[in-house]
Length: 581
Image (cartoon, rainbow, N blue to C red; front, side):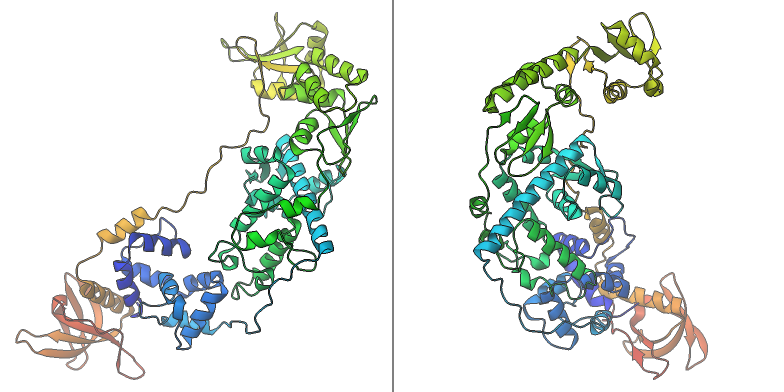
Protein backbone atom coordinates (compact mmCIF):
# COMPACT_ATOMS: atom_id res chain seq x y z
CA UNK A 1 0.00 0.00 0.00
CA UNK A 2 1.40 3.36 -1.01
CA UNK A 3 1.78 6.03 1.62
CA UNK A 4 0.84 8.51 -1.11
CA UNK A 5 -2.73 7.24 -1.10
CA UNK A 6 -3.33 8.56 2.39
CA UNK A 7 -3.63 12.30 1.57
CA UNK A 8 -6.07 11.44 -1.22
CA UNK A 9 -8.07 9.16 1.08
CA UNK A 10 -8.36 11.94 3.65
CA UNK A 11 -9.50 14.39 0.95
CA UNK A 12 -12.06 11.89 -0.36
CA UNK A 13 -13.47 11.44 3.14
CA UNK A 14 -14.06 15.19 3.47
CA UNK A 15 -15.38 15.71 -0.07
CA UNK A 16 -19.09 16.26 -0.67
CA UNK A 17 -21.25 13.62 -2.29
CA UNK A 18 -21.47 15.79 -5.41
CA UNK A 19 -17.68 16.03 -5.62
CA UNK A 20 -17.32 12.28 -5.23
CA UNK A 21 -19.96 11.56 -7.87
CA UNK A 22 -18.29 13.97 -10.31
CA UNK A 23 -14.90 12.37 -9.68
CA UNK A 24 -16.22 8.84 -10.15
CA UNK A 25 -18.01 9.87 -13.35
CA UNK A 26 -14.89 11.54 -14.76
CA UNK A 27 -12.69 8.56 -13.91
CA UNK A 28 -15.13 6.05 -15.37
CA UNK A 29 -15.80 4.24 -12.10
CA UNK A 30 -18.38 1.44 -12.22
CA UNK A 31 -21.36 1.79 -9.92
CA UNK A 32 -20.86 -1.74 -8.57
CA UNK A 33 -17.14 -1.42 -7.83
CA UNK A 34 -16.17 -3.43 -4.72
CA UNK A 35 -14.49 -0.73 -2.65
CA UNK A 36 -14.68 -1.06 1.12
CA UNK A 37 -13.54 2.39 2.23
CA UNK A 38 -11.89 5.60 1.06
CA UNK A 39 -8.43 4.02 1.33
CA UNK A 40 -9.51 1.50 -1.32
CA UNK A 41 -10.75 4.37 -3.48
CA UNK A 42 -7.49 6.29 -3.15
CA UNK A 43 -5.36 3.30 -4.00
CA UNK A 44 -7.50 2.41 -7.02
CA UNK A 45 -7.44 5.96 -8.41
CA UNK A 46 -3.65 6.12 -8.05
CA UNK A 47 -3.04 2.84 -9.84
CA UNK A 48 -1.00 3.38 -13.03
CA UNK A 49 -3.68 1.74 -15.18
CA UNK A 50 -6.37 4.10 -13.86
CA UNK A 51 -4.15 7.13 -14.45
CA UNK A 52 -3.28 5.96 -17.98
CA UNK A 53 -6.99 5.76 -18.78
CA UNK A 54 -7.62 9.28 -17.49
CA UNK A 55 -4.73 11.26 -19.00
CA UNK A 56 -5.94 11.01 -22.64
CA UNK A 57 -9.20 12.69 -21.60
CA UNK A 58 -7.46 15.85 -20.41
CA UNK A 59 -7.79 18.90 -22.67
CA UNK A 60 -4.70 20.88 -23.52
CA UNK A 61 -4.93 23.44 -20.70
CA UNK A 62 -5.22 20.80 -17.97
CA UNK A 63 -2.59 18.55 -19.56
CA UNK A 64 -0.15 21.47 -19.69
CA UNK A 65 -0.83 22.39 -16.06
CA UNK A 66 -0.38 18.78 -14.90
CA UNK A 67 2.84 18.53 -16.90
CA UNK A 68 4.14 21.66 -15.17
CA UNK A 69 3.22 20.33 -11.75
CA UNK A 70 5.12 17.11 -12.47
CA UNK A 71 8.22 19.28 -13.01
CA UNK A 72 7.67 20.96 -9.65
CA UNK A 73 5.90 24.04 -10.99
CA UNK A 74 2.53 25.42 -9.99
CA UNK A 75 -0.58 24.21 -11.84
CA UNK A 76 -2.03 27.71 -11.27
CA UNK A 77 -5.72 28.12 -12.05
CA UNK A 78 -6.12 24.43 -12.96
CA UNK A 79 -5.07 23.12 -9.54
CA UNK A 80 -8.60 22.76 -8.19
CA UNK A 81 -9.82 20.97 -11.31
CA UNK A 82 -6.91 18.52 -11.23
CA UNK A 83 -7.36 17.89 -7.50
CA UNK A 84 -11.05 17.19 -8.20
CA UNK A 85 -9.92 14.57 -10.75
CA UNK A 86 -7.55 13.02 -8.17
CA UNK A 87 -4.58 13.77 -10.43
CA UNK A 88 -3.09 16.22 -7.93
CA UNK A 89 -2.92 15.76 -4.19
CA UNK A 90 -4.70 18.28 -1.97
CA UNK A 91 -1.44 20.22 -1.60
CA UNK A 92 -1.26 20.69 -5.39
CA UNK A 93 1.54 18.20 -6.05
CA UNK A 94 1.15 14.99 -8.05
CA UNK A 95 1.50 11.57 -6.44
CA UNK A 96 4.52 9.62 -7.74
CA UNK A 97 2.41 7.36 -9.98
CA UNK A 98 0.86 10.43 -11.60
CA UNK A 99 4.21 12.18 -11.92
CA UNK A 100 5.75 9.08 -13.53
CA UNK A 101 2.89 8.75 -16.03
CA UNK A 102 3.05 12.43 -16.95
CA UNK A 103 6.85 12.43 -17.22
CA UNK A 104 6.57 9.84 -19.98
CA UNK A 105 4.48 12.24 -22.04
CA UNK A 106 5.12 15.54 -23.74
CA UNK A 107 2.91 18.54 -24.29
CA UNK A 108 3.43 19.75 -27.87
CA UNK A 109 5.06 23.15 -27.97
CA UNK A 110 4.48 25.58 -30.77
CA UNK A 111 3.08 28.90 -31.75
CA UNK A 112 -0.49 29.78 -30.92
CA UNK A 113 -2.75 28.81 -33.86
CA UNK A 114 -4.21 31.68 -35.80
CA UNK A 115 -7.89 32.48 -35.48
CA UNK A 116 -10.20 31.49 -38.32
CA UNK A 117 -10.32 33.89 -41.24
CA UNK A 118 -13.71 35.17 -42.43
CA UNK A 119 -14.82 33.29 -45.52
CA UNK A 120 -14.98 35.05 -48.86
CA UNK A 121 -18.33 35.42 -50.58
CA UNK A 122 -17.62 32.58 -53.00
CA UNK A 123 -16.32 30.26 -50.24
CA UNK A 124 -19.35 31.05 -48.09
CA UNK A 125 -21.67 30.30 -51.03
CA UNK A 126 -20.08 26.88 -51.50
CA UNK A 127 -20.37 26.23 -47.75
CA UNK A 128 -24.06 27.17 -47.81
CA UNK A 129 -24.68 24.88 -50.78
CA UNK A 130 -22.94 22.03 -48.99
CA UNK A 131 -25.03 22.67 -45.88
CA UNK A 132 -28.21 22.57 -47.96
CA UNK A 133 -27.10 19.32 -49.62
CA UNK A 134 -26.24 17.73 -46.27
CA UNK A 135 -29.56 18.71 -44.71
CA UNK A 136 -31.41 17.18 -47.67
CA UNK A 137 -29.27 14.01 -47.52
CA UNK A 138 -29.96 13.55 -43.81
CA UNK A 139 -33.67 13.94 -44.53
CA UNK A 140 -33.39 11.22 -47.19
CA UNK A 141 -31.60 8.91 -44.76
CA UNK A 142 -34.28 9.47 -42.14
CA UNK A 143 -37.06 8.71 -44.57
CA UNK A 144 -35.28 5.56 -45.72
CA UNK A 145 -34.75 4.42 -42.13
CA UNK A 146 -38.44 5.05 -41.36
CA UNK A 147 -39.41 2.82 -44.28
CA UNK A 148 -36.85 0.10 -43.51
CA UNK A 149 -34.26 0.41 -40.73
CA UNK A 150 -30.74 0.72 -42.16
CA UNK A 151 -28.29 -2.00 -41.13
CA UNK A 152 -25.07 -0.83 -39.50
CA UNK A 153 -21.72 -2.46 -38.83
CA UNK A 154 -20.48 -2.90 -35.28
CA UNK A 155 -18.55 0.40 -35.49
CA UNK A 156 -21.69 2.33 -36.45
CA UNK A 157 -20.96 2.66 -40.16
CA UNK A 158 -23.47 1.65 -42.83
CA UNK A 159 -22.77 -1.77 -44.26
CA UNK A 160 -21.80 -2.13 -47.91
CA UNK A 161 -25.22 -3.41 -48.99
CA UNK A 162 -27.03 -0.39 -47.53
CA UNK A 163 -24.57 2.03 -49.12
CA UNK A 164 -25.04 0.36 -52.48
CA UNK A 165 -28.83 0.58 -52.16
CA UNK A 166 -28.65 4.25 -51.17
CA UNK A 167 -26.34 5.09 -54.07
CA UNK A 168 -28.68 3.29 -56.49
CA UNK A 169 -31.44 5.61 -55.28
CA UNK A 170 -29.43 8.60 -56.47
CA UNK A 171 -27.78 9.75 -53.24
CA UNK A 172 -24.02 10.43 -53.29
CA UNK A 173 -21.94 7.83 -51.44
CA UNK A 174 -19.48 10.33 -50.03
CA UNK A 175 -19.78 11.11 -46.31
CA UNK A 176 -22.78 8.84 -45.72
CA UNK A 177 -21.30 7.62 -42.44
CA UNK A 178 -20.69 11.19 -41.25
CA UNK A 179 -24.29 12.08 -42.04
CA UNK A 180 -25.50 9.07 -40.06
CA UNK A 181 -23.36 10.19 -37.11
CA UNK A 182 -24.81 13.70 -37.28
CA UNK A 183 -28.35 12.29 -37.32
CA UNK A 184 -27.66 10.08 -34.29
CA UNK A 185 -25.81 12.78 -32.35
CA UNK A 186 -28.68 15.20 -32.84
CA UNK A 187 -31.31 12.67 -31.75
CA UNK A 188 -33.01 12.48 -35.14
CA UNK A 189 -32.14 8.80 -35.44
CA UNK A 190 -31.32 6.08 -32.98
CA UNK A 191 -29.39 2.83 -33.22
CA UNK A 192 -31.27 -0.22 -31.99
CA UNK A 193 -29.74 -3.66 -32.40
CA UNK A 194 -27.32 -2.32 -35.06
CA UNK A 195 -30.19 -0.82 -37.05
CA UNK A 196 -30.69 2.87 -37.71
CA UNK A 197 -34.25 4.04 -37.04
CA UNK A 198 -35.84 7.47 -37.21
CA UNK A 199 -36.99 8.89 -33.88
CA UNK A 200 -40.14 10.95 -33.23
CA UNK A 201 -37.84 13.98 -33.05
CA UNK A 202 -36.57 13.08 -36.52
CA UNK A 203 -40.13 12.85 -37.84
CA UNK A 204 -40.89 16.34 -36.47
CA UNK A 205 -37.60 17.66 -37.88
CA UNK A 206 -38.54 16.46 -41.38
CA UNK A 207 -41.54 18.78 -41.36
CA UNK A 208 -39.56 21.92 -40.55
CA UNK A 209 -38.25 24.41 -43.07
CA UNK A 210 -34.75 23.97 -44.50
CA UNK A 211 -33.48 26.87 -42.37
CA UNK A 212 -34.97 25.41 -39.20
CA UNK A 213 -33.57 22.01 -40.08
CA UNK A 214 -30.08 23.48 -40.43
CA UNK A 215 -30.41 25.45 -37.19
CA UNK A 216 -31.31 22.31 -35.25
CA UNK A 217 -28.37 20.39 -36.72
CA UNK A 218 -25.84 23.18 -36.16
CA UNK A 219 -26.83 23.80 -32.54
CA UNK A 220 -26.85 20.08 -31.77
CA UNK A 221 -23.42 19.73 -33.38
CA UNK A 222 -22.13 22.38 -31.01
CA UNK A 223 -23.76 20.72 -28.00
CA UNK A 224 -21.97 17.38 -28.54
CA UNK A 225 -18.49 18.80 -29.17
CA UNK A 226 -15.84 17.51 -26.73
CA UNK A 227 -15.25 19.63 -23.64
CA UNK A 228 -11.80 20.63 -24.83
CA UNK A 229 -13.27 22.39 -27.87
CA UNK A 230 -15.95 24.30 -25.94
CA UNK A 231 -15.57 27.78 -24.46
CA UNK A 232 -16.89 29.08 -21.12
CA UNK A 233 -19.43 31.14 -23.10
CA UNK A 234 -20.97 27.98 -24.52
CA UNK A 235 -19.47 28.24 -27.98
CA UNK A 236 -16.43 26.55 -29.50
CA UNK A 237 -12.80 27.37 -30.12
CA UNK A 238 -11.87 28.58 -33.61
CA UNK A 239 -11.32 25.55 -35.84
CA UNK A 240 -7.53 26.11 -36.19
CA UNK A 241 -7.27 25.57 -32.40
CA UNK A 242 -8.90 22.13 -32.45
CA UNK A 243 -5.85 20.05 -33.41
CA UNK A 244 -3.74 20.33 -30.23
CA UNK A 245 -6.61 20.15 -27.73
CA UNK A 246 -6.10 16.54 -26.59
CA UNK A 247 -2.32 16.06 -26.72
CA UNK A 248 -2.29 12.69 -24.91
CA UNK A 249 -5.11 11.03 -26.84
CA UNK A 250 -3.68 8.88 -29.62
CA UNK A 251 -7.08 8.76 -31.36
CA UNK A 252 -7.63 12.51 -31.27
CA UNK A 253 -6.20 13.27 -34.72
CA UNK A 254 -8.77 10.96 -36.34
CA UNK A 255 -11.59 12.25 -34.12
CA UNK A 256 -10.64 15.84 -34.83
CA UNK A 257 -10.54 15.20 -38.58
CA UNK A 258 -14.02 13.65 -38.38
CA UNK A 259 -15.36 16.68 -36.47
CA UNK A 260 -13.89 19.05 -39.06
CA UNK A 261 -15.53 17.01 -41.81
CA UNK A 262 -18.92 17.22 -40.12
CA UNK A 263 -18.49 20.93 -39.54
CA UNK A 264 -17.78 21.36 -43.28
CA UNK A 265 -20.82 19.23 -44.17
CA UNK A 266 -22.97 21.59 -42.08
CA UNK A 267 -21.42 24.66 -43.71
CA UNK A 268 -19.73 25.79 -40.48
CA UNK A 269 -16.26 25.66 -42.04
CA UNK A 270 -15.49 26.57 -45.64
CA UNK A 271 -13.32 24.40 -47.89
CA UNK A 272 -10.27 26.55 -47.17
CA UNK A 273 -10.84 26.44 -43.41
CA UNK A 274 -12.31 29.95 -43.31
CA UNK A 275 -15.37 30.78 -41.23
CA UNK A 276 -18.70 31.74 -42.83
CA UNK A 277 -20.59 34.56 -41.16
CA UNK A 278 -23.36 32.28 -39.85
CA UNK A 279 -20.82 30.23 -37.86
CA UNK A 280 -19.80 33.23 -35.74
CA UNK A 281 -22.89 33.31 -33.44
CA UNK A 282 -22.59 29.57 -32.84
CA UNK A 283 -18.87 29.83 -32.06
CA UNK A 284 -19.62 32.69 -29.67
CA UNK A 285 -22.21 30.67 -27.75
CA UNK A 286 -25.25 32.49 -29.15
CA UNK A 287 -28.29 30.93 -30.90
CA UNK A 288 -27.80 30.02 -34.53
CA UNK A 289 -28.83 32.54 -37.16
CA UNK A 290 -29.73 30.83 -40.44
CA UNK A 291 -30.49 34.02 -42.36
CA UNK A 292 -27.02 34.08 -43.92
CA UNK A 293 -27.35 30.51 -45.13
CA UNK A 294 -30.87 31.06 -46.42
CA UNK A 295 -29.79 34.14 -48.32
CA UNK A 296 -27.45 32.05 -50.47
CA UNK A 297 -29.89 29.22 -51.14
CA UNK A 298 -32.57 28.98 -53.82
CA UNK A 299 -36.05 30.00 -52.70
CA UNK A 300 -38.31 27.14 -51.64
CA UNK A 301 -41.54 26.66 -53.59
CA UNK A 302 -44.96 25.48 -52.46
CA UNK A 303 -46.44 24.53 -55.83
CA UNK A 304 -45.85 21.72 -58.34
CA UNK A 305 -46.83 20.85 -61.90
CA UNK A 306 -48.89 17.64 -62.20
CA UNK A 307 -48.63 16.03 -65.63
CA UNK A 308 -50.67 13.51 -67.62
CA UNK A 309 -47.88 10.91 -67.52
CA UNK A 310 -48.39 10.53 -63.76
CA UNK A 311 -45.35 12.64 -62.92
CA UNK A 312 -44.93 15.84 -60.95
CA UNK A 313 -42.32 18.57 -61.31
CA UNK A 314 -41.35 21.02 -58.58
CA UNK A 315 -39.92 24.20 -60.19
CA UNK A 316 -37.56 24.65 -57.20
CA UNK A 317 -36.78 23.10 -53.84
CA UNK A 318 -40.16 22.04 -52.49
CA UNK A 319 -40.93 23.14 -48.95
CA UNK A 320 -39.95 20.25 -46.65
CA UNK A 321 -43.40 19.50 -45.18
CA UNK A 322 -44.85 19.33 -48.69
CA UNK A 323 -41.94 17.24 -49.95
CA UNK A 324 -42.32 14.75 -47.10
CA UNK A 325 -46.02 14.26 -47.71
CA UNK A 326 -45.67 14.14 -51.50
CA UNK A 327 -43.00 11.45 -51.16
CA UNK A 328 -45.42 9.36 -49.10
CA UNK A 329 -47.69 9.29 -52.16
CA UNK A 330 -45.21 9.32 -55.06
CA UNK A 331 -41.63 8.18 -55.66
CA UNK A 332 -39.07 10.93 -56.08
CA UNK A 333 -37.15 10.27 -59.29
CA UNK A 334 -34.62 13.10 -59.15
CA UNK A 335 -33.47 15.55 -56.52
CA UNK A 336 -32.15 18.88 -57.65
CA UNK A 337 -33.34 22.46 -57.62
CA UNK A 338 -36.18 21.11 -59.80
CA UNK A 339 -37.24 17.73 -58.39
CA UNK A 340 -39.43 15.20 -60.17
CA UNK A 341 -41.83 12.67 -58.68
CA UNK A 342 -43.80 9.77 -60.17
CA UNK A 343 -47.12 8.27 -59.05
CA UNK A 344 -47.87 4.56 -59.38
CA UNK A 345 -50.39 2.06 -58.09
CA UNK A 346 -47.81 0.88 -55.54
CA UNK A 347 -46.96 4.38 -54.31
CA UNK A 348 -50.62 5.33 -53.90
CA UNK A 349 -51.35 2.02 -52.14
CA UNK A 350 -48.44 2.78 -49.81
CA UNK A 351 -50.03 6.14 -48.94
CA UNK A 352 -53.38 4.49 -48.29
CA UNK A 353 -51.66 1.97 -46.02
CA UNK A 354 -50.11 4.88 -44.13
CA UNK A 355 -53.51 6.40 -43.37
CA UNK A 356 -54.29 8.55 -46.40
CA UNK A 357 -57.65 8.31 -48.16
CA UNK A 358 -58.53 8.99 -51.77
CA UNK A 359 -60.12 12.28 -50.76
CA UNK A 360 -57.17 13.42 -48.61
CA UNK A 361 -54.74 12.65 -51.44
CA UNK A 362 -56.78 14.53 -54.04
CA UNK A 363 -57.33 17.48 -51.70
CA UNK A 364 -53.61 17.74 -51.00
CA UNK A 365 -52.61 17.51 -54.64
CA UNK A 366 -55.27 20.04 -55.59
CA UNK A 367 -53.88 22.54 -53.07
CA UNK A 368 -50.30 22.41 -54.35
CA UNK A 369 -50.86 21.84 -58.08
CA UNK A 370 -50.46 24.70 -60.54
CA UNK A 371 -52.09 22.63 -63.27
CA UNK A 372 -55.02 20.99 -61.52
CA UNK A 373 -55.26 17.21 -61.19
CA UNK A 374 -54.89 15.35 -64.51
CA UNK A 375 -57.58 12.77 -65.19
CA UNK A 376 -55.15 9.78 -65.34
CA UNK A 377 -53.85 10.66 -61.87
CA UNK A 378 -57.34 11.07 -60.41
CA UNK A 379 -58.35 7.73 -61.93
CA UNK A 380 -55.25 6.03 -60.47
CA UNK A 381 -56.01 7.35 -56.99
CA UNK A 382 -59.69 6.38 -57.08
CA UNK A 383 -58.98 2.92 -58.48
CA UNK A 384 -56.28 2.25 -55.87
CA UNK A 385 -58.64 3.39 -53.10
CA UNK A 386 -61.36 1.05 -54.33
CA UNK A 387 -59.01 -1.90 -54.19
CA UNK A 388 -57.42 -0.91 -50.89
CA UNK A 389 -59.02 -2.73 -48.02
CA UNK A 390 -60.51 -5.43 -50.23
CA UNK A 391 -58.65 -7.85 -47.98
CA UNK A 392 -59.34 -7.32 -44.29
CA UNK A 393 -57.04 -8.64 -41.56
CA UNK A 394 -58.01 -8.83 -37.91
CA UNK A 395 -57.49 -10.87 -34.74
CA UNK A 396 -60.37 -13.14 -33.76
CA UNK A 397 -61.07 -12.49 -30.04
CA UNK A 398 -62.42 -15.94 -29.26
CA UNK A 399 -59.52 -17.99 -30.65
CA UNK A 400 -56.70 -15.45 -30.89
CA UNK A 401 -56.07 -16.55 -34.47
CA UNK A 402 -55.61 -14.08 -37.30
CA UNK A 403 -58.50 -13.90 -39.74
CA UNK A 404 -58.27 -12.82 -43.39
CA UNK A 405 -61.54 -12.05 -45.12
CA UNK A 406 -62.56 -10.50 -48.44
CA UNK A 407 -65.67 -9.92 -50.51
CA UNK A 408 -63.67 -11.23 -53.49
CA UNK A 409 -63.58 -15.02 -53.27
CA UNK A 410 -61.04 -15.14 -56.10
CA UNK A 411 -58.56 -13.20 -53.98
CA UNK A 412 -59.03 -15.63 -51.09
CA UNK A 413 -58.43 -18.57 -53.43
CA UNK A 414 -55.28 -16.92 -54.76
CA UNK A 415 -53.90 -16.29 -51.29
CA UNK A 416 -54.66 -19.85 -50.20
CA UNK A 417 -52.37 -21.27 -52.93
CA UNK A 418 -49.79 -18.45 -53.12
CA UNK A 419 -46.40 -20.06 -52.42
CA UNK A 420 -44.96 -16.76 -51.13
CA UNK A 421 -47.52 -16.93 -48.30
CA UNK A 422 -46.67 -20.47 -47.17
CA UNK A 423 -44.95 -19.27 -43.93
CA UNK A 424 -48.37 -17.96 -42.83
CA UNK A 425 -49.90 -21.46 -43.02
CA UNK A 426 -53.24 -20.01 -44.14
CA UNK A 427 -56.16 -22.42 -43.79
CA UNK A 428 -59.53 -22.00 -45.46
CA UNK A 429 -62.68 -21.87 -43.36
CA UNK A 430 -66.24 -20.74 -43.89
CA UNK A 431 -65.46 -17.05 -43.38
CA UNK A 432 -62.18 -16.83 -45.28
CA UNK A 433 -58.66 -17.69 -44.18
CA UNK A 434 -57.07 -18.04 -40.76
CA UNK A 435 -53.53 -18.33 -39.41
CA UNK A 436 -51.75 -18.86 -36.13
CA UNK A 437 -49.27 -16.15 -37.13
CA UNK A 438 -49.78 -12.76 -35.47
CA UNK A 439 -52.07 -10.20 -37.07
CA UNK A 440 -49.38 -7.63 -37.89
CA UNK A 441 -47.06 -10.21 -39.46
CA UNK A 442 -49.88 -11.53 -41.63
CA UNK A 443 -50.80 -8.01 -42.71
CA UNK A 444 -47.28 -7.00 -43.73
CA UNK A 445 -46.69 -10.28 -45.53
CA UNK A 446 -49.85 -9.75 -47.57
CA UNK A 447 -48.91 -6.15 -48.25
CA UNK A 448 -45.42 -7.16 -49.45
CA UNK A 449 -47.09 -9.67 -51.77
CA UNK A 450 -49.15 -6.72 -53.13
CA UNK A 451 -52.51 -7.85 -51.89
CA UNK A 452 -54.82 -4.88 -51.03
CA UNK A 453 -54.83 -5.65 -47.32
CA UNK A 454 -56.09 -3.51 -44.47
CA UNK A 455 -56.02 -4.06 -40.72
CA UNK A 456 -59.38 -3.55 -39.04
CA UNK A 457 -60.28 -3.28 -35.37
CA UNK A 458 -62.94 -5.08 -33.33
CA UNK A 459 -65.70 -2.89 -34.77
CA UNK A 460 -64.40 -3.15 -38.32
CA UNK A 461 -62.76 0.28 -38.26
CA UNK A 462 -59.55 0.69 -40.32
CA UNK A 463 -56.34 0.83 -38.30
CA UNK A 464 -52.91 2.12 -39.24
CA UNK A 465 -49.83 0.52 -37.68
CA UNK A 466 -46.16 1.38 -37.87
CA UNK A 467 -44.13 -1.41 -39.42
CA UNK A 468 -40.92 -0.41 -37.69
CA UNK A 469 -41.94 1.34 -34.46
CA UNK A 470 -39.18 3.29 -32.78
CA UNK A 471 -38.37 2.09 -29.26
CA UNK A 472 -39.51 4.57 -26.60
CA UNK A 473 -37.01 7.38 -26.26
CA UNK A 474 -34.84 6.84 -23.22
CA UNK A 475 -32.57 9.57 -22.01
CA UNK A 476 -29.14 8.26 -21.09
CA UNK A 477 -29.25 7.33 -17.43
CA UNK A 478 -26.48 9.07 -15.52
CA UNK A 479 -24.45 6.82 -13.27
CA UNK A 480 -25.93 6.64 -9.78
CA UNK A 481 -23.13 6.54 -7.25
CA UNK A 482 -25.39 7.13 -4.25
CA UNK A 483 -25.24 3.52 -2.94
CA UNK A 484 -21.46 3.41 -3.40
CA UNK A 485 -20.92 6.73 -1.64
CA UNK A 486 -23.25 5.73 1.19
CA UNK A 487 -21.35 2.48 1.68
CA UNK A 488 -18.07 4.36 1.85
CA UNK A 489 -19.56 6.81 4.37
CA UNK A 490 -20.91 3.98 6.52
CA UNK A 491 -17.47 2.43 6.77
CA UNK A 492 -15.74 5.71 7.50
CA UNK A 493 -14.35 5.56 11.06
CA UNK A 494 -13.84 8.50 13.41
CA UNK A 495 -10.06 7.90 13.63
CA UNK A 496 -8.40 8.10 10.21
CA UNK A 497 -4.92 7.68 11.69
CA UNK A 498 -5.89 4.43 13.36
CA UNK A 499 -7.60 3.13 10.23
CA UNK A 500 -4.61 4.01 8.12
CA UNK A 501 -2.19 2.30 10.53
CA UNK A 502 -4.33 -0.86 10.46
CA UNK A 503 -4.12 -0.93 6.69
CA UNK A 504 -0.34 -0.37 6.69
CA UNK A 505 0.16 -3.19 9.18
CA UNK A 506 -2.07 -5.53 7.18
CA UNK A 507 -0.17 -4.70 3.97
CA UNK A 508 3.18 -5.28 5.75
CA UNK A 509 2.04 -8.69 7.00
CA UNK A 510 0.89 -9.73 3.53
CA UNK A 511 4.21 -8.55 2.02
CA UNK A 512 6.27 -10.05 4.92
CA UNK A 513 7.95 -6.65 5.30
CA UNK A 514 10.33 -5.51 8.03
CA UNK A 515 8.77 -2.65 10.01
CA UNK A 516 10.30 0.07 12.13
CA UNK A 517 7.67 0.22 14.88
CA UNK A 518 7.33 2.88 17.60
CA UNK A 519 5.59 1.59 20.74
CA UNK A 520 3.94 3.62 23.51
CA UNK A 521 5.20 1.89 26.69
CA UNK A 522 3.12 1.73 29.90
CA UNK A 523 5.53 4.09 31.66
CA UNK A 524 4.93 6.77 29.03
CA UNK A 525 8.19 6.24 27.14
CA UNK A 526 8.46 5.39 23.45
CA UNK A 527 10.39 2.32 22.27
CA UNK A 528 11.47 1.54 18.72
CA UNK A 529 11.60 -2.04 17.38
CA UNK A 530 12.53 -3.64 14.06
CA UNK A 531 9.90 -6.30 13.52
CA UNK A 532 9.52 -8.86 10.75
CA UNK A 533 5.72 -8.77 10.50
CA UNK A 534 4.17 -12.24 10.40
CA UNK A 535 0.57 -11.90 11.52
CA UNK A 536 -2.22 -9.51 12.45
CA UNK A 537 -5.41 -10.43 14.26
CA UNK A 538 -7.41 -9.88 17.40
CA UNK A 539 -6.01 -6.38 17.70
CA UNK A 540 -2.43 -7.67 17.92
CA UNK A 541 0.60 -7.57 15.60
CA UNK A 542 2.93 -10.58 15.61
CA UNK A 543 6.50 -10.65 14.36
CA UNK A 544 10.16 -11.40 15.09
CA UNK A 545 12.17 -8.74 16.89
CA UNK A 546 15.37 -8.60 14.85
CA UNK A 547 17.50 -7.13 17.62
CA UNK A 548 16.49 -9.61 20.33
CA UNK A 549 15.76 -12.49 17.91
CA UNK A 550 12.50 -13.30 19.69
CA UNK A 551 8.84 -13.47 18.65
CA UNK A 552 6.78 -10.57 19.94
CA UNK A 553 3.06 -9.86 20.03
CA UNK A 554 2.20 -6.17 20.29
CA UNK A 555 -1.22 -4.61 20.98
CA UNK A 556 -2.06 -2.55 17.91
CA UNK A 557 -3.49 0.18 20.13
CA UNK A 558 0.01 0.68 21.61
CA UNK A 559 1.69 1.18 18.21
CA UNK A 560 2.48 4.84 17.67
CA UNK A 561 3.74 4.50 14.11
CA UNK A 562 5.02 1.90 11.68
CA UNK A 563 7.28 2.31 8.70
CA UNK A 564 8.56 -0.24 6.21
CA UNK A 565 12.35 -0.52 6.25
CA UNK A 566 14.07 -0.12 2.90
CA UNK A 567 16.18 -3.31 2.53
CA UNK A 568 18.83 -1.48 0.50
CA UNK A 569 19.46 1.29 3.03
CA UNK A 570 18.08 -0.04 6.25
CA UNK A 571 16.14 3.17 6.80
CA UNK A 572 12.41 3.48 7.28
CA UNK A 573 10.13 4.42 4.41
CA UNK A 574 6.45 5.10 4.50
CA UNK A 575 4.22 7.42 6.45
CA UNK A 576 4.59 8.65 9.97
CA UNK A 577 1.32 8.11 11.83
CA UNK A 578 0.06 10.26 14.65
CA UNK A 579 -0.16 8.65 18.08
CA UNK A 580 -3.29 6.60 18.61
CA UNK A 581 -5.96 8.17 20.69
